[in-house]
Structures are given as structure tokens and as C-alpha cells.
Length: 336
Ligand code: TRP
Image 1: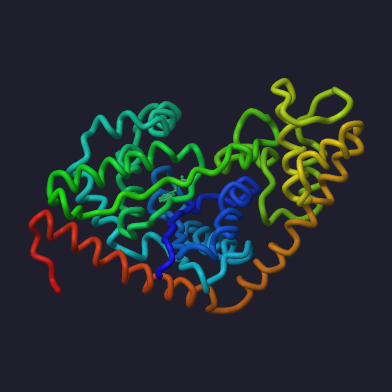
Image 2 (image 1 turned 180 degrees about the vertical axis):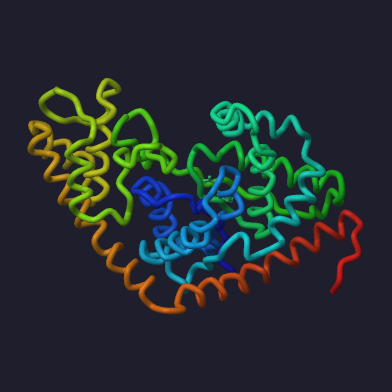
């Protein structure tokens, strides 16, 4: 029996941080043995906001190296670059012709980003979810592990697949399979070091708001020394008046592999002056093996190229037949 397939991706924009690791990559590592995993770098999505051309490829490689450093195992997973596989762009065009404009205008992420950019909103920001639907449906995954913020894009993906099936398929033999979302628990959300109510994010202008996976120990120490806290004595979880406290305790719990109950007892009487050094040591120790492996991987000449070449071949072997299936249904003559 073939294993069920999962597919997910991250945009290679800026450095990966603890939120990316704990919220996404670590979950992929945890489930990888039970699935046939397809993990990619969404470098076509990256340019929906301006990117420095001299950095784009390097960032893409950095993310690939980080997947491996964090424990993604090539025995279970295929790692590839979105732009290496033209089928993504091609299917996105076909989908855009069957996607009503108002479906895209209703996307929350589009509305938020469009407000931020005010004038000159790129068309790509609007059609971004159509490309995401192509990314997903090309591989006919069973599940798509993503964060809560991507739920709407997955619903749209299912809507596009259903519409294609309805317009061009037969009721008893759908063209595309509808994937199930695999939304991770809200608790896995890592919040900003500057504001415990906001998600830790690559797009926050302040680097002090996040811990990057490649931050050296002195940088981690500096950021945690400076991070926002409050003036209450004693530390506890789940107090809506103390979002920073909840976030930092949660980080400590996950990275020290302890239960919530154990951390609650350990920290109930601590002040920040005692807790922060403890958290700092824990973060540094948890990131050290990942950083060591990362440097090994990028230090081996040609290694990443070979991983991504192999990834491209395995991904294309699935993507191209799916693309051809859709093209044939729309009436194109498809070369054998
Ligand atoms: N939009 C996703 C994000 O910003 C990245 C992404 C692009 C993705 N294509 C995907 C995630 C396909 C899952 C599946 O996080």
C-alpha cells in the first residue's frame, strides 16, 4: 500500500525563524514517516512582493538546507524548487481562467496585503492563491499541512478543483482529487518578541521581534534580554492580559520538551530575571544541532544541487501527468 501524500511549502523570503520551525517544519519532520512528503520552496510566490534578484536563489537554497538541517529525511521526503517545474505556472494560468474574480478579491490575505501596499498592488498578489492551488493540485496530495492563516487558500483550492471537475469532468470520474487541509493546533503559533499578540513574522521590520534559526548565541541572548515582558511577578500560562508571558513560557515548554504542567510548576514563582537566562540557554541548546547540520550541508559542494535535481525529477514525474490530464480535459492536444 502506498503511503498517503502530503505537500507543503514555505516562501524563501528572508531568514527562517523559530515560528517557521515550530509552526511548520518541525511538524513535517514529526509526520514524515507516515507520509510520502513533497516539500518545496515557493519562490514564485516570493516575488508577489519585491525581492532582491541577487538574493532570491541564495534564499531558496538556504530554506532547502534548513529543511534538511531540521530533520527532513530524503528517505521519506522530496524537496524541490517551485520555479524549477514549469507545470506550476502553466496550471496556474489554466486555473485562472476558471476562477471567478470575486473569489480572489474575497481572500483575507489579499485584502490585508493590498491595504498595506495601497497603490500599485501587483496582479500577482491577487492571483497568488491560484498559483497555490496549482502547487497543491498538481501533486494530488491527501493532506496539506499549513497554519490557520492558509485555511482560506486551501478552501479556494478545493473550490477550484471542484469547479474544474464540474465544468470539464464526468460526475463519476473527477479530473482532480480534492485535498484535505491539515491545520496545526493554535498552540503551535509562535508570537513576536515585541508584541505577544502578533505572529512572529519575516515581514516585521524589526529583527528584534524574532529569533532566526541561524542567529548565533550572543544574538539570541541579546534579543531575549530586550524582548517585551511585563512587570508582574510569577509566570503562568493562558492569561489573556499577559500574551508575552504565555508565548515565552510556551517556547520554553516546547524547546525543553516538557509538559505544560511541569513548566507551570517550575516557573510559577519566577521573575523575568530568573526565567530569561533559562529560556536563553534552552533556545541556544535547541538550535545548536540544527545550526551545526546546516553549516555541514551548505559546506558540502554540490550537495544541495544534487538534492534539488533529484527533487525536481521526482516532483515532475507526478506534476507533468496531472497537468496533461487537465489540459486534455480542457481540449488541448497533449504530446505523449
Ligand atoms: N502561501 C503559503 C504561505 O505563505 C506558501 C505556499 C505556497 C504553500 N504554495 C503552497 C503552502 C502550497 C502549502 C501548499 O505560507
